Image (cartoon, rainbow, N blue to C red; front, side, top):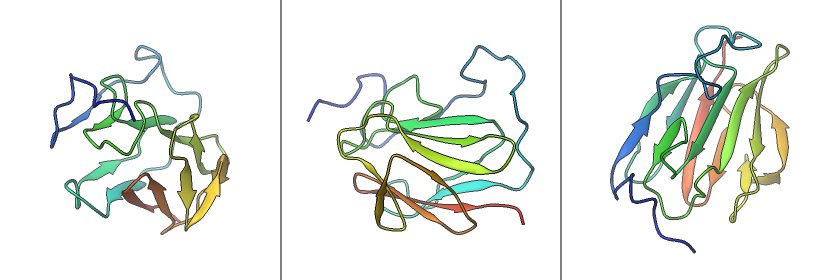
Length: 128
């Protein structure tokens, strides 16, 4: 296992405030009301609004949600919106990504699904 990215010290979190592509308009604008909330560990209770079409979660400083969690990869998973709905995609992580306990490469998300990355659990609330 590689060490934490030095830019994200242990016990810290960072949220990028621009799109991954340098601030260009998203291809698909997600509906309002979608959120992700950390359900376990040091970051329990941290809530993020999913207001972009791409949202990378990892421990690296370039992740949209950067968490100093040793069991997740620098760019671990992507929560995205493709016009039809939200999905999660594993980005080649070391420990994999699970949805409701099942390993996935890419999975369409439903309201109240639980995503697990390493020891980190994240719940999603999606508009109906």
